[in-house]
Image (tube, rainbow, N blue to C red; front, side, top):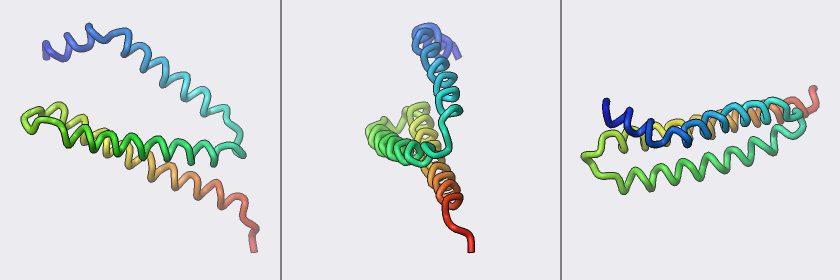
Length: 102
């Protein structure tokens, strides 16, 4: 527990930046018009694919005794896959809106 608290105290500015990025990202994406949503989702899916590959590569080089590194790598892979799948589902729904109804 002391190691975790030491990590947070050493990287406090980085943690503040990540929290700020989350709030700014939510605000920016929340104000995107529906017409531009599909191209943005395509870009987000591509970035998530890169994150998945990067997490797999980092996980392969992690020491088998480093349980924290293995757990974080696994969580990164799972969240990246969920993001890609969710992006494709949302993109499919958006494209369904533009199809003609019979």
